Length: 117
Length: 106
Image 1 (spheres, helix red, strand yellow):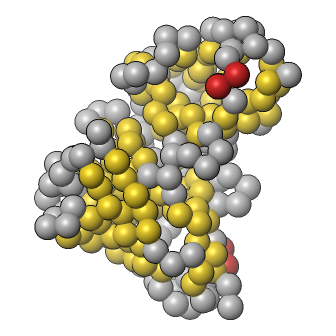
Image 2 (cartoon, rainbow over the protein chains, first blue to last red):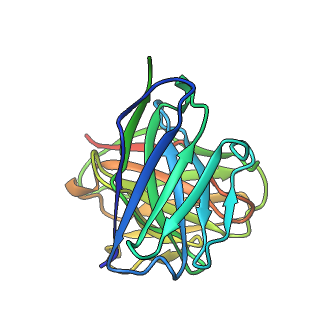
């Protein structure tokens, strides 16, 4: 079974970088696409970006200057880095797999990240 | 961006009721509409993809319909374990989510 698990610091200071890891078991990240999504307080959700089976990336234009998604295929992990964070980046961050022609089909449980000094 | 509007934001119904949740897109999304269920503290679960396709392992009491800009998730007979927040998601043009419907048992 495909399983995803997010990990990373729960507290980040303003202006610093947010770095999260998604560890995948049961499926290789060299297949499919793998994305990051976040859910803000108040429940608005935003797609942030994804990395493909080949390592190419696509980002939400609203984040394009601050976001980077990379991967380590040897560890079957992919990563999110969001630079210059503000309090508005406080959210629960999810990683997910993009299923063929069916959108995000497997998700992690999410990790809550608070941006505060 | 395509905006997704869900209604109602909160729905209270009795066990055994037929329940309908709505999702409206700001423009035609060509049936590229998914429904997810999220229980408190759990990962979102894909229920329905591309309007009316039941994801493997999902009970048949869940169904989806719609076209153009208007889409519906129906639970034919509400069960206690269906208490959750349900959100829609379009993947026709970029990717955007609805704000969710919280489903409660009356």
